Length: 134
Image (cartoon, rainbow, N blue to C red; front, side):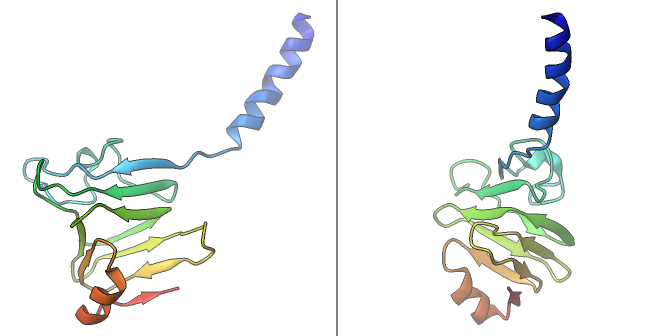
């Protein structure tokens, strides 16, 4: 029985190690001196900067920290971004983010300065000259 368990255990480890879980990483913001910095781990619920495996949640912060993230560099790719009511994301002049959007089969790149608010990102993006591509 021990020999069978010894053989099966590595197989189970390999099986589960090959799956990567997508996690929700929620914006908290407000860390002193880095209140709006997307690239600062303490501003995120998982205490790490979101990556391609994270579904990003940016909630309404009017009752907590009163700040929203600002992207000042190319921050890479996230799995998705969801905005709470009246929440927003600001892209500075050199800011860029890519949204994998695997569920829809379309990737989105956002590469020009402006503010992306709530669910009206496309209308606001067009008005502010934000450049998006699929």
